[in-house]
Amino acid sequence: MKFTDSKILPPGLERSLRFYVTNPSPCPYLPGRRERKAFTNLSITESDLVHNLLSQSGFRRSQTIAYRPACPRCNACRSVRVPTRDFIPSRNDRRAMQRNGSLVRHQVEAEPTREQYALLKAYLNTRHEGGGMSDMSYRDYSAMVGESPVKSLIFEYRDGPEADAPLVACSITDVLHDGFSMVYTFFDPDLENRGLGHFMILDHIRHAQDLGLPHVYLGYWVKGSPKMDYKRRYKPLEVLDGDRWRLLRDDE
Image (cartoon, rainbow, N blue to C red; front, side):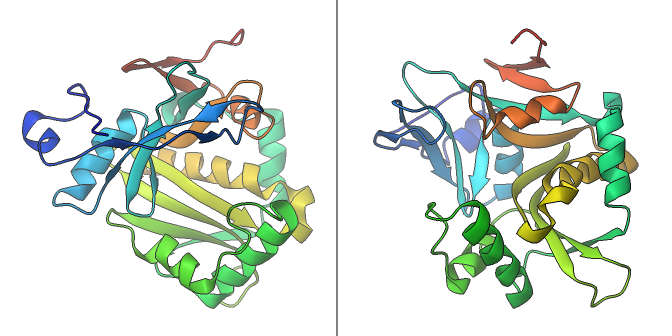
């Protein structure tokens, strides 16, 4: 099925893409509901430009595919992003930064390593056992990381300044014209009490501020889903409402 939206892309680029919609499948966030996704392949010329435009319109990337929810009677999945210029860390945020003050960020090319894969497997086996990614092989991880057709990095977080310091967390991060898009994060499950997921988002916000980038894209927020509700803690938070971004209200 072809999916088009003339508001997303300039006419020339729109004609170069084909959009499709998946068949219905169980919703991973809201029990009893079915989901569908619109998607297109990013392995084209001008892939970075297209990816940037699609990201601003609520799409996310998975390997070579850009997708967004396309459920006929549900709008629960809402794209959210942090406006970095206005973000002021809370007391809880500051504690998370202090708790992880020994971590050193290394931005490396999106090339897989066995060390990253071992960390990912430990994370999946502890946090998402039996999930869709739990049987991921190293070849699968290599495809997940290395086949990106757009500008992508891996933010490695090591517990100490040494080059061989323990790798405790990673974020696969796309670099957009207007900020960072956090594609997937994972961390050492034995260090769960350090709030490494929280810390990585805060560090991306801080790094974007340092670079003068206005946004950090966090993917989808789903009201009523414990898996996604944590994103509300980052304030102010913008939500995509139709074709415009606006601040998410406290009463939403």
